[in-house]
Length: 284
Image (tube, rainbow, N blue to C red; front, side, top):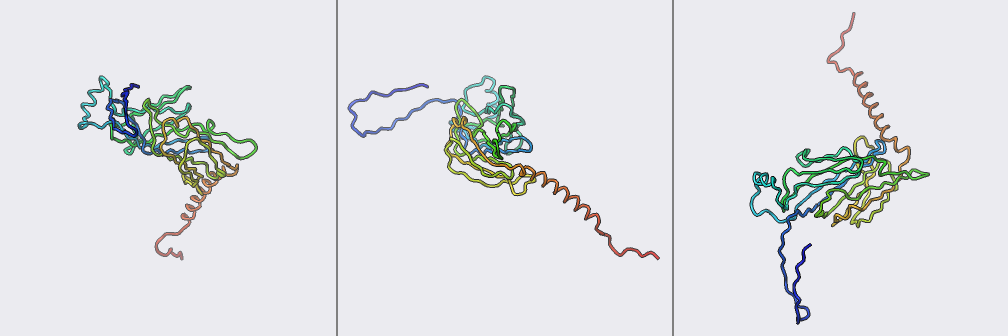
């Protein structure tokens, strides 16, 4: 970038201090995520891995001097002037990603485009409104992928190795900073001996259970938290190893079968009840 040099100065006493201020023009957004919640859900039965990222984005660029006018903004877009507002975000995904979605607190946002081929998979996002300096925009994105590209089975046992990106999300020329990241890896129900490895500096880790549809005891969940992460962490990977016994895979099908049988048994029992009012007539 451009440089400005002061001095040289001579005959300065030791320990002398003097404040200096610099004013410059920067017509690009300064994207900062105050919070990112990232869920990675592994399904052995479906052979699917589901990703969901929930962002709370703010723009730390200079604030508007006057009130925002939608008419003025729409008019100026014809000649595309420099602006510090966030007009769109580009999210590169792994090749083979499918079923992407883009929502916020209101619902689905249709102003998005997904380009996928044998060489790339890119999700282009456009917020409902231009995010100027001091403004915020919470949203969530999600997609699915083939589990075989991220998971492998260890030889001679029931161990598995999961290798996923620690951080995905917007990749912009000006960069993105993250104040707090909370990542959850939701493993299949019955997974044990969970261990992990990553180069990202973590502030806390925990193991818990997460209950979803037709679960009995809940899925084993690894939660990792990190603070003050920069965009370079996109290249970091998270490796999770765990044990998943063969019989544990039949827990959910058995739960479904037992639930269906219980429903039919209850319906049959209710059908046998006599709910008529009064005594039955006696035939002579």
